[in-house]
Image (spheres, rainbow, N blue to C red):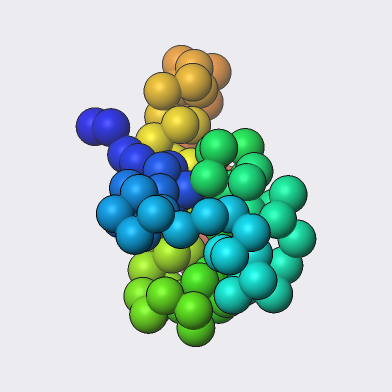
Length: 97
């Protein structure tokens, strides 16, 4: 399953259709333009702070931004982790009292 990075989603849903410049986004979010550009370039993910700022400025819920980031992170890990190196933990038996 391919999951989109939140920065890519943001670019496709807001930046491209409305032709918003990174400097304008940075001003609305109250953060450095370099961070906005890193987010749009998928070099930076959504933090709790960024999720709140995006929610306040663009109207999606904070939780939706965090969920999108979490789903993206999990999809990346699932593609790159060798699950054969993981085994279930064997809990010691508890003696019945």
